[in-house]
Each structure stands twice: as structure tokens, then as C-alpha cells.
Length: 256
Image (tube, one colour):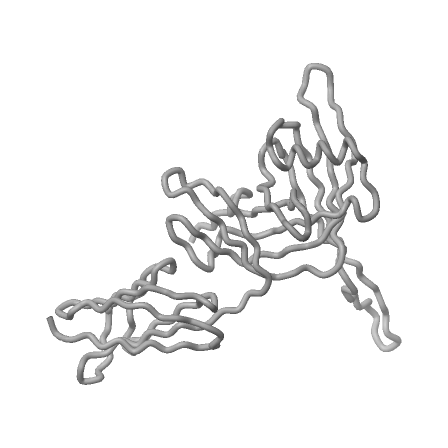
């Protein structure tokens, strides 16, 4: 089987161009020609007296982002960098935050809302240089130095249903999920094979011989579903997930 590398565009970084108390998440993209998040592992090499080879331990990480960009006036990230260049803030005045997430495996996906597991890190922003060659674009190199532990959570992306482009990003700390299990049977409690279970935002699954399928969903949500099978009456409904680790939904399909 051929292996296709995933595109760089599926790895997304957001910058807080607002404040810690009132964050404004802006897509790091416009004008940015390169962005690398360096994890900077701090390791310790030890050799024990009864062994002939060293043992390497990872003690901690010190992530940072190196960002290269050409100046694009009006872009929120570019404007934020420009203000940093103008003011050259130090100490807490240089505080910001960034988020990293991958679009490869969404937790939820509809035409207008997409949710992804995400990682937020506090950081300090510093400008390395600005300028460029005569006749070329203004170039800027920026470093975001991570501070402290990252916060795992969920980023909710609002998408324009017509253009498919993201219009807003919101971050919620904590990733609590529930296994949402559907069991599809006849009125005689016999499992139904090849029934179609559609969970809004999470796609369709076909039941195996057990008549059961499982979805992993975010807690504190209401989910719409539809279950159908050949020769059976379709059942639609909704299920409310709160803080359960497992939620079971029994669906009985009557003959049509």
C-alpha cells in the first residue's frame, strides 16, 4: 500500500492576539513562509557501573516556535508582530499564548462546526530581526518561547458553510470524552447486521454481527442520530451526554 505524506497545512497554529483574560485566536498563516515548533528536549546521559553503554533520560522539554514571515498589513498576526517590533516589550508585557492542533482527526465535524484536540502553551514573544534585501518584501523573524506546562483542550472552529473557510476559533480547556455505544436490534431482541447508524457530526457506521457500533464524543453535548436498515422503519432521535465514560443507546427497528 502506498504511503502518502500528510500536508503541512493540516498542522495548525493559532496566536493569541488579544489578552490572557480575553483571548483572540488568530490563524498563523498570512505572510508566514515557515513555522517550526522546536520541542527542545533536555536529556541526561548516564552510564551505570555494570553496563558498557549509556542510558539517556528525557528530563523535560522547552518548546519554542521559530516563525519567518513577510509583512502583510491588516492581518491580525502580522499586526501583532508589528506592535511587538514597535514597542519591544519585556517581562510580562511580552506574554502571549499559542495553540497547536492537527486537522487530521476531528472530534466532531459538520458543515459549520469542527472540533479538534488542541494544546495551548503560554509563551513570550520576541523579535529576532526585521528587514530584507532591496526591492524585496519586508521580512520578519520571530520566536515564541514556551513557558510552563501545556494545557490540553478542544479548539472549536466555526466554518463558513459556503466557502468552507474558518471564521472563528475558540479554545476550551480539558478533553473529556464518552464512548457512545449504539446497539441495534429487532423487536425480538435479535442483533441487526449492516444497519446504518448516522451520528450528526461524526459520520456513518455499519453494524457488524453484534449489532453494535461505538463513537467517541465530547461530553456535555446533545447528539442527533438516525438508524436504518433494509426492510425496517428508520428511527431518529437525540441523546444527551453529560459526564459518563460510557453511554449506551438501545435502538429497536420494527418491520416496515
